[in-house]
Picture 1: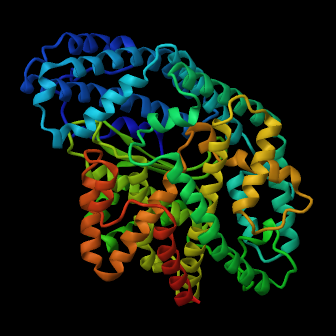
Picture 2: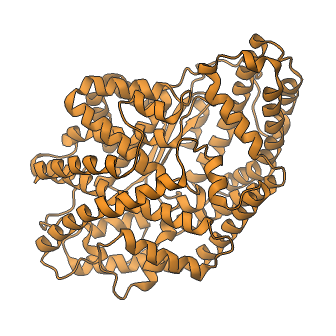
Picture 3: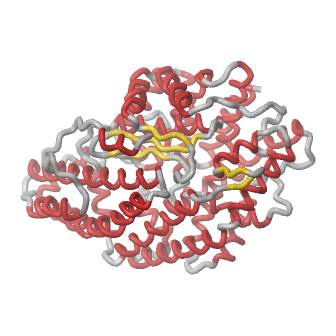
Length: 574
């Protein structure tokens, strides 16, 4: 997509507080508006509610400016102009916002009219504001600026990674295609080429992560916390569960899910006819069939997913059609583009944008379905006036995306026919099960890191190996110690979104419940799914799950029947 497309989006929600013609380029452009908010009268309920809407409008305009800067940078990490604009925002704009945000939050807290607000409507908003106030430390502002720069440096390192294989250069994403080939010798050669290329950056990434950890430890100490884990739990507003709940999930993953993954792997090993499964044996079709090729170009990927969304729900299909028409998709993999995929909401125009790196794999279809779920979430709460509510807890944001993958799964015939359709659906459910222990791995690793201030690079790698082997028992790594010790470095969440990963497991369990509901009554399940998404962030997390027809729990008792249901589905696809 042309970057210019971002400048041509329709503005369906006219500004009322922010001047209509104001183009935000720097903090100076919005400073007078902050002054107005700080001086405003909030002595009555009506005035306070209007002040909250004005504050939300300004917040949306600034948030969208920052999103556009970041999107452009990820679209082309080689552009010095985009990089400069991103760093200018991080260094010269964001730091000035934080002390003013603290003053605005205090103004809300001190308003005599706060007691008159409808608690059902504003309880979550109030809880969030008071929490942010309690955590704010001016000393953390420069640390957060430095943290953002280090996170961006990690993205640069990853985006610059090119793997030379058979005389040609490939992105790591493109290298994944070779792991689907039936020639085991070639698979191994491609896997080693990619792993050894990543290992060249291992020291740089280790040192970068070390700096990030030290910064984060200091932030936690400044805020009065004994460790960064406890600080980040509060910062992520995890009011409805604790580290102990996460550890209960680790236990469920180890005792309930890992044995199922091992059974699936043993079937794979026997079909491949090998003594041991090696890392390059885990993606190829075990029956010796060529790789699935769902599409040849991103336009066919987009068109196929559009048809699927229409089959799930006609209104959701129309929303995706609008995104295609407006140019809100950038799907192809290319040199210089940041890795990974995401959905970003442009808060002022209230439209979602999807970024990904498609190379023609089955996983690309799943990724677009997943990010499409996030996009439909943004559409669902689009009319909410408060930006704090035009969002949701991450744990439920991922229910929106993962449920869409499951609700779309019956319609994969848009990309596959007959036996390939079964292969694709079977592969999806197998990968779903394999991901759940990996989530436990990453969460347990982060808990280890951030509850032991001052840990060294060597100590972290030793801990990683122990944790990795607890949850990942499939794929013999004999002679690949260098890879095993640095496998975590490819997980971008560790760098750019600390402690954002357990949410995927919590959400997957919620999404599986939505899926099972749809098996009984598809129309009602989708209606509840959409109703829950429309609530945005206006209700506590357990209530959002309940609205979607799911139970908010991720211990062994909840995990076991859901995993059994997936096993049954797999058996039906054999």
